[in-house]
Length: 415
Ligand code: AMP
Ligand code: MG
Image (cartoon, rainbow, N blue to C red):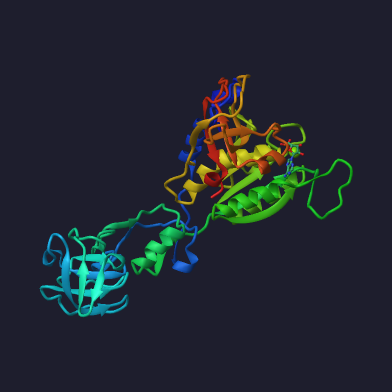
C-alpha cells in the first residue's frame, strides 16, 4: 500500500484538510483524454484541446447598431441640420457607394456603413422632409459597431481548457469556425458497493435498501459532460469486487466507487483494490464524508467515496469534481463561492469543515442570507433536495447570525 498524501495524517488519527486533499488530487490527475475534432452541434459541454484564434475581425466591417441614418459627423452643423437622403442599406446588403459630402443614407441594424460614413443617428431622433432628413447634433462614431472592435483577426478567441457553453458556441460560430478540437469525454467507471443495495423497481427483502448513489453520482458525472460506464453494485465479496473493478479499469479512464471505504469487516473493497493496485485511505476534515479513499486499479486512478448518500454527493461535488475536471483537460476547476450573511447560528465548533445544506432567502432588509436545513445527516438526501447550495463552516469556527459565510451554489458545482 502506498503512503501517498495521507501518510502520517491518517496514521496519527489527524484529519487531512479538504483543500490539501483537493490539491493533492489535482497533482495526481492523469493527462487529458485523446483529442477529437467535432462540429459545432456536437461541441456543447466539451473541453477545448487547443487555443482558438480568430480567423477574422469581429465585426468584420463597420456596421450600424440602430435603425436610423448614417452620415459623416463632420458634415453636420454643431446644432444639427439637414442632409440629403441618398439611398437605403438593409442588413445583408453591400454598401459600395461612397457617401458624398452633405449626404445621409437610411440604414438598418446590422447593415454595413457606406464608405465615408462614420456615425449613425437612431430614426426616432430624425425628421424626414422630402429628399432631406433633419438630424440632431451627433458625436462622431455614435451607434456604429466598428470593424474589429470585439475581436481582431489573429486574437485569442478561446483558450485550451475552456468548457464550451452556449455563449462560446455562439462566438465560434460568429467567427465562422465550424469544427474544433476537443478532448473526448472522460470515461468514468461507476460502481457502488454493498450487499444491501437493490435497484428501484425491485422488491426489498429485510435489511435491504435502494441504491441512491448509483443514480445521483451518474447524474453528476453526466452533468459534468463525462461518460458514465455504470457497473451497478458490487456485492461485499472479494472475488466479485475484483472482477468488477478489473473490468471497469480496462474500459475506463477513472473509477469512482461509493461505499466500502469506512473499513468495517464487511468492506472487501479495500482488499480487492489492494490486490489490483494500491489504496490510500484518507480521513478528511470534512463533514459529511470523513472516509475517502484514493488509489489506482490496474494503472487507472480510483476514488472511493463514502456510502452515505449525502456524504457521497457532497464529497463528489467538493473533492472529486476538481480532480475529474482536471483529468478532462479543464483549466478552471474550482467552483465559484459567495460570501453572504448567515441566517443562522452555528454555535458548536467542529474539527471538520462542515458543508451544510442551505438555501438563499431574503433577509429582513430584502438582501439574501444563507438559511440552513434543520436535518444535516450524512445518510439523508431530502435536505439536499430542499437546498440550492452548501454553506461552508470552517473547522473550529462558530458562526453567529449575520456573520459572513461562504456559500457554494449548486449551480456552480453541478455543471
Ligand atoms: P459503507 O461505507 O459501505 O459502510 O456504507 C455506509 C452507509 O451508506 C450504509 O448505511 C450503507 O447502507 C449506505 N450506502 C452505501 N452505499 C449506498 C448506496 N449506493 N446507496 C444508498 N446507500 C448506500
Ligand atoms: Mg458497505
